[in-house]
Image (cartoon, rainbow, N blue to C red; front, side, top):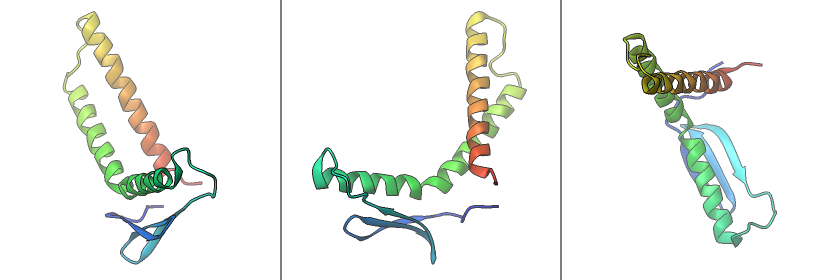
Length: 113
């Protein structure tokens, strides 16, 4: 199953309510849960706006994550981050760990249940 292609847009429909959509497809609705925000109404609105922007960026973030993963994997296959010294081995281990994290994140996003 594929997600709705981007770009997505975030629109404040009314106070305390945001919609994330692509063309005429509604993707998400962000509502305030009614609990007081530690920074009051302004803080709540800023948090909701930030959440809307993050969700809106999801398709681009996934695309860039896949690109970064593929570039790093190709560089690794071509001998970057060799294991010739302790420092290089540490870097190699960090790169392998990062690739595993990228793969886990992508799999989580693409997982079908």
